[in-house]
Image (cartoon, rainbow, N blue to C red):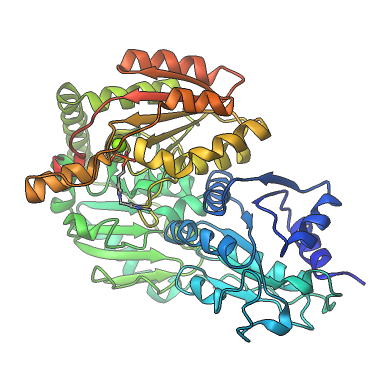
Length: 537
Ligand SMILES: Cc1ncc(C[n+]2csc(CCOP(=O)(O)OP(=O)(O)O)c2C)c(N)n1
Ligand SMILES: [Mg+2]
C-alpha cells in the first residue's frame, strides 16, 4: 500500500512536475527519503524557505507552469509567508508542500517540536485554497487537486499540509477526485453590448495585465489591438505581451505625458486579464473612460473602476470570441493617423528623457545585452522602477517584477528559478544593495547546483527610495543609510565571479563577459539613482 509520501510523489510525477525547491527537516524527512528514491524529480536544495519560495515563483512565471516549494512545520512554513504573498499578488501558481505536528497532536497545544497553532490560517488571505491531509485521506488525490487548483482559471498559490506521521502511514486510495473545471466563458451574456461598444468606439485602447501573460494570449492581444487599431498599455508584469517596438505598443499604463494624454482622450478601455488593482493603476491617478472588463472571474469587477460591461470566465475563450465577433471590422483612417502621431510623440518624449537621465542609458545597456527573449528580473530598487517605465520588453515575461506585494529581496532568487525553468534563455537579475542582502545567501545554491547568470547589484549604500521619500516628505533622512560589505569579496567567497562597475560602458563590458561565461556573476554597480520615475513621468 502506498504511503502518504508515495501519494504526493506519484501525483507530482503524474502531473509532470520535475523540479522542487526546498529544505529538509525532521518533520519532512520521510518525504525527502521518498524523493531520494524518485530520480525523475530534481530537488534544488536552498538556504532559506522565503528565497526557496521566490525561486519556485520565478520558475512558475518564466516557465508558465507550476512551481513547488517544500517546507516544514512552524518556522520553515513561517518563512514561506511573505514570498507566497508576492506569488498571490502576481497570480503565480506556486504549490507549498509542508508538514504539521503528528496528526493526533494537531490543535491540542502540547507544545510539540516546531508546533505553530493554526499554521494553515497564515495562508488564508494569500492562497487560492488550503488542503490539510488528515487520517483516511488520499494524499495522491489531494495533491492532484491542489496542483490543478493552482493552475486552473486565475492561477495562484495553493497550500498543502501533511502531518509528519501521515507522510509515513499508508494513504487511502480513492482513485482521485474530479478536478475543478475551468468556468466556461460567460461572455455570451454580454456579447452584443461589448461588441457594439468596441465597433462604435472612436478611440479605444487595451489595458493588459498579468492574466494574459499567464494564459499565453500574446497572439490574441496583438490581433485584437490590430483589429481595433487600439494602443496597448500594460501593468509591469504584462510588459511585452505586445512587443514594445510594435507600432501599437504604448508601454506602461500609468506613465504620464503622451500615454496619459492618449488615455484621457480615449472613449473606451478594454481591460483584459488585469485586476485593475489600486497599487497597479488607481493609486497612480489613472482615470479610465467607459470600461469593458475581461477577467477570469468576478472577484475584481467594480472594485476600483466602474465597469460598464464585464466578460468573465476562460480568458482564452473570451478573447477568441471577441476576435471572432470583430471579424470584418474596419478602422477609421483618422484613428490610424492619430495613433501614429501619438506613437511618434511617445518615442520623441522617451528620447528627450534619455538625454536627461543616465538611468535610461543603463537600461539600454541591459536591453542590448539580452536577446529579445531574454528575461530581466527586477527588484523594487530605483533602477527597477525606471525599468517598469522605460525598459522595452519584447516578449511576454521579458520583464518580471515583484509587483504582487512590492516586496524587496525577490529578484535574485526569482531569477534562479527563471534560469532553471528556461536554461536556454539569458537571464539577468537587477537588485539594490538593500534587497540583495535579503537573499545573497542563495549564491551558495547557485554554486552548488551550477546555476549561472549575472546579478546586477546597484549599490547606493542606502535604502535609496526610502531616503528619497523621507527627504521629500520630511526634508530629512532617518535610518535609511547602509554600511555594506564589499560585495565583490562577498560574491567570491561564495565561489562566484565578481566585478565592480560605475558607468554604462563598464556595465556593458561586464554583462557581455558574464552572459557568455560559464560562471555565476555578481556585478556591483556603484551608482545612485536619486529619484523614482513615478515622481517625474
Ligand atoms: C520586505 C520588505 N520590507 C521593506 C520594504 C520597504 N522598502 C521598499 S524599497 C526599500 C529600499 C530598497 O533598498 P535597495 O534595495 O537598496 O534599493 P534602492 O531603493 O536603494 O534603489 C524598502 C526598505 C519592502 N518593500 N519590502
Ligand atoms: Mg540601495
